Structures are given as C-alpha cells and as structure tokens.
Length: 136
Image (cartoon, rainbow, N blue to C red; front, side, top):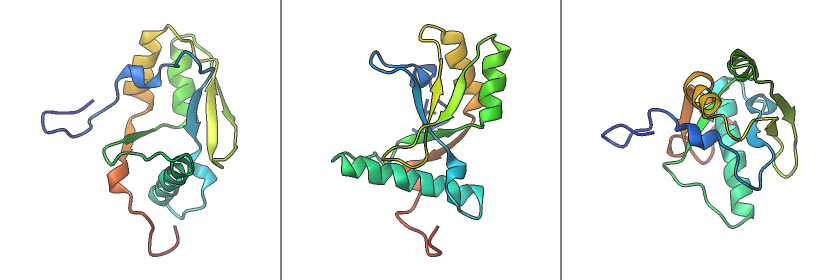
C-alpha cells in the first residue's frame, strides 16, 4: 500500500493470502542472524533473501517491502479472531526460513488484521546496502 508519493505505508491484506499451491505462509526468522542490533539482523535477513533469489536467477526489486512482525503479535492477532496458527522454523536453502502454518485461506478479516496489527514494521529493499562495513 503506497501513499500519493509512492512511499510504502502498509500492506494489503492480500499480501498474506496463501496462493493455490501453498500450504503455509513463508516468513523468515530475523533473530536467526547474529547481528548486534535488530536493524543489523533485519539487514542480514534481507541480504540472505537476495542471495537466495540470485541463486534462482531472480532479483528482488528495489521497491520491494518486507513486513516484520513478532511471533507473539501474530499469535495475539490470530487468537483474538479465534484462529490458531503455528509458526515453525523450516530452514532449507534459506537458513532463516520459517512458516506460518494453519493459516485459513478464506478469512479476509484475519488477513487484514495481520496486515494492520501484526506486520506493522516494514523495511524497503532499497534501504538495505549490499554489505556493511562491520560484517553485519
């Protein structure tokens, strides 16, 4: 969701909807990374996603936004709507990969709540440098 100047100001609920072939929502565990601050761990996570995309001959566009939520907040939001989801660490080629399981496909109210109440922090791909001076 963008403002009149093209700045990202939030997420559309549809961003959290499962596609037909998906059984869970793919997310990443920021704390998997060992940066000394939250911002550095987020940057490492974005870089890891860029590298994984490059391995598949894809790129993440500079205007791509990443939503950030805590497990606690996702569980609170879902629980407040009488929905129980599981957030599970599911590493593979992406070490920080995790999944939100048991997310209903047809609950637009829940998706809107995730977009507006859980994933309230966001970072843009173009805000994260390719590498940092201190190795983080």
